[in-house]
Image (tube, rainbow, N blue to C red):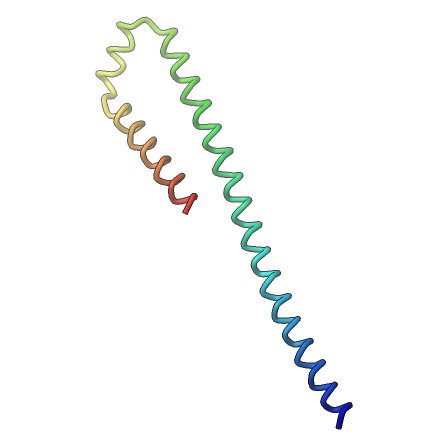
Length: 97
């Protein structure tokens, strides 16, 4: 009887360990995915910031009168930039949750 009980206990322990292993492997996979997405988001944020700086620098090189004409021709661009900035901020807040 003792051998049968030991076998049953060991089989139960093995099953529990396999379940825990599978759970941990799944958690690791999810955490890796999250880390990759976080890195990608940070890279894109940096790239967008750099592009915004470049646009600003280039606009500074253009005479003011031409910029005013350009802004009159495309008034939606600045409001679109504001909306994109707000969306970026809300995405960052969601990432933190």
